[in-house]
Amino acid sequence: MLSKSILSYQGPLSFSTIDWLLSEFKLAAEDHDLSFKTYKKMISLMIEALENVTKYAIQVNCNGKSTSPEFCPSCQIRRNGKHIELITRNPVRKKDVAPLQIRIDNVNKQSQEELKELYKTTITNGEFSPHGGAGLGFIEMAKTSGNKLEYAFENLSKDFSLYTFRASMTL
Image 1: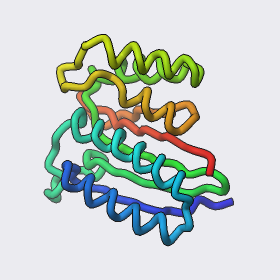
Image 2: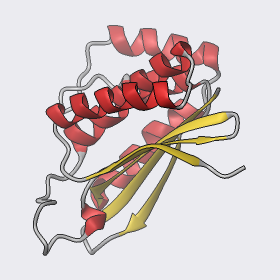
Image 3: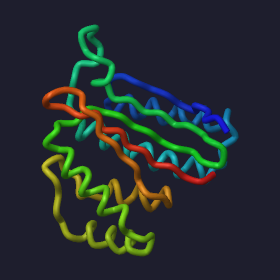
Image 4: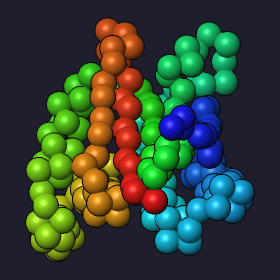
């Protein structure tokens, strides 16, 4: 079955843009007959993933004609048969690739029960990243989706990679 786009955005990303995307998804969810449960889960995934992009992505000027489109963050929600997926893309510094891979791989090797324990441990340990996060985002997204988180990195330039993140759920 062909995938059907529910929401698609590429451009500068800020907290006000996230609010707008959440509102747009609410309308799109109604148009695509998504259940309230699926809608709530996708909203949770969107908030976590888009806040990660806003906090951790390289801030580039996406409005200028000289900026390559690959350097502008993007977000897409697609429905594919009995699955719905959220895909985000944004540039990251190459030095940040390995730590991201380690964090996602660590979350992906956990069972749902182990994720609950990891969440409790992480939330109570009081450690925060330089960006202010406690590291709960990937854990929360894996718990919410019930699936492994997917990612890929593509070379953009000498200093940057394009980070693609994907979280999917069964409808």
